[in-house]
Length: 215
Length: 240
Image 1: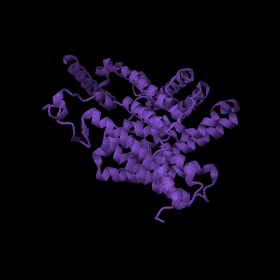
Image 2: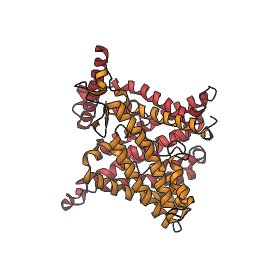
Image 3: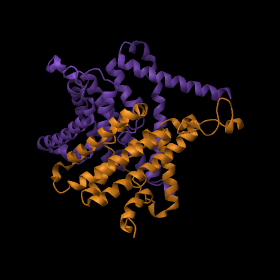
Image 4: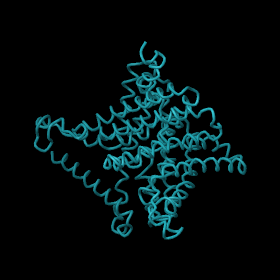
């Protein structure tokens, strides 16, 4: 018997695929689309959400019995907002340029529906350890989509990954550019994020027929 | 003129859904029927129109660096802007609750059509996003902030109305099974966003007059840069 029982590891693994927050539960789309033009921004966003989700779920789960249900949304928002301020200040201190690039989208983690959705659906009804795992699992499931989208958009759009030119130099015409390949600048524009996520959904649902909606 | 420019800019060019992807969660979840989409859209306009000017005042007189100077000269050094997230969201959550109570009391018919959407709205990214963009774009006056709130709300309303209408029709089309529902909605929204990008050139003619206004100038120069880049990209393609 390892650290996690079977039921617990299901909490982490489920959101990665069959119960993915973005492609299945339709939560947290806003930030997923706006900041994925570069892989680096996607990774930073994933880490931020991981932190906020993990800690936030634990806090909400700890105080779940003393929150009056009428004002629970305000309480939840306050907890998340406090955590997001920490993230924002840390980013400003250690990665200033990146935090400029993410601009308001760090603040928008507060209203990221994944966080509120999981608070409502899970942390309010479950113990601390399980809530923590659920938070981590959902944040990872969110991050995976972000990183896939960021990977393709940066690779096809600017020919780089994390700022490193992996396809050769477009000006000196080395690497694949020697064969007449061109960067697809269109991938950097925001509408392509939607279409890439659409394609991810297509691939995922073709592999798992159980997920198909009937309109 | 300034008002008119901001109005059209917020509706078409900086459309909340198509340009910045704000409020996508409820946009996707509540767009299955036109009637519910209209209800939610109206509620978004309503709440944005209240919260954006309110948060503007909050930002201007409490949060900004040196904003507390009205309390006395010794407060000039305070910078509370790191508190803006928590203050904005608290304002929004309380306003939504307040609006819900007031509307329920005074206009039951409006409450019936709008009421169920109000709790949804506190966590709609479009509302907080409106306030945060208002802050980062340095909107100049409370009138402009109100204008910004209303017009970005209208932009959101248009977007959800359009997608709901399309989704009602697409029910009868033969979409590949794995794309049904969410997948095709994403792709349609992407195509609509590409369509809305064509509004980008709408305001470039007004650049000369706009230069006096500091905030507008910054934004328009960003845009002209982007456009110059787009044109350059096109030229490259044409040359080939």
